[in-house]
Length: 87
Image 1 (tube, rainbow, N blue to C red):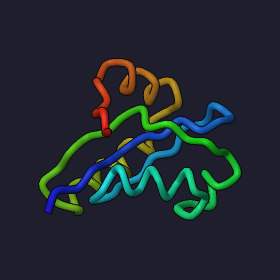
Image 2: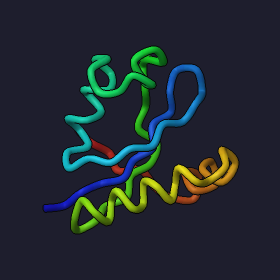
Image 3: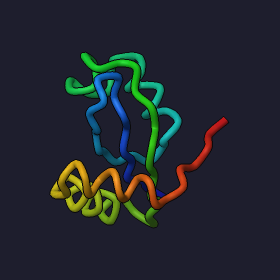
Image 4: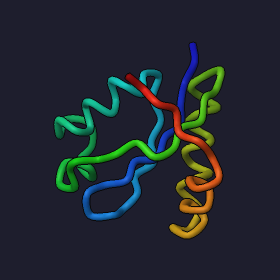
């Protein structure tokens, strides 16, 4: 099963990193205030970065790696990659 690591930009400008197996559903859950305590108070959120992996373990590992980056490093990562567009 495919899994994804993603970065959201919150309404206050902060960045949130997570992983999921369904990006569209997870984004909807974040924006409804039901996915994360952190994003609940910073709505709305916008998907700004996604990486795809073949399994959940890889996505979780990448999530941890991204969380170790500074804000500036995360912004560089976001700006160099193209975000998936979900319709």
